[in-house]
Length: 319
Image 1: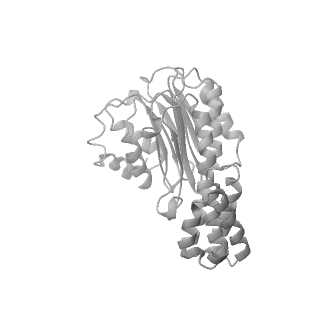
Image 2: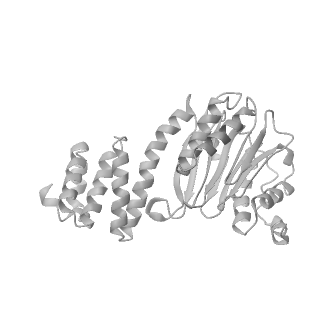
């Protein structure tokens, strides 16, 4: 083990945080990386209010961490800091546990952006508790109906190879729930996927960040939100490229966003509006008119915006 990583165990971020206990987000989760796509992510579900505010942590180009059971929430930011400084998943896990007062109560899954993974379940975690890991992923859970939950999650993740990371994470959650999930029932879920410059206008790395804090069917609800989030991810890619004046790339992503938004009527008018802007920037006047007219027909309130929007000035008189 590299001496430098052990020395990082003295990082000041550990000192004020490891002493505090927080509620137990007993749960099942998966952390995973897609190095080719440059994505890392976490998916989690639990009989616990707002599990997404506690368990998932991720940073593009660095890795992803799930901290649960009697969660030490400092493990998220401190673990990502260790990974960013070159520590491996196993080294990071060892440092986090060595600095903790009650490591036997912690459950943690870690994956690096390169796909190295580690998981641990302390002896003090409530049964059933355990995890599995392999290249690119780690699954773990506690207070589960049994080991079949993490086995089903692992199987679903591995069998979905070739699909986008966010879809693989969701399929793993669904499989874990179908296998029994949290023995206490259902309440909340969250999915976080990070990719460099993936957020709005490219200023953050949040490609997908959806959560359901309290719902009778949290996985069904997060699946609904995920459909919208995927549209939004394409939309963000398109608009970021447009702002960078990379117009052909912007058009490629905005067309994808519009196609996906056909199944998301609540988003479709605004996606079409921006498609009109991007088409016009690519000198497709007729295509821009078609998209803008349809956007306004679906949401007449957009007419006011179009009448003042300099991005649509070249077609304004024909709308």
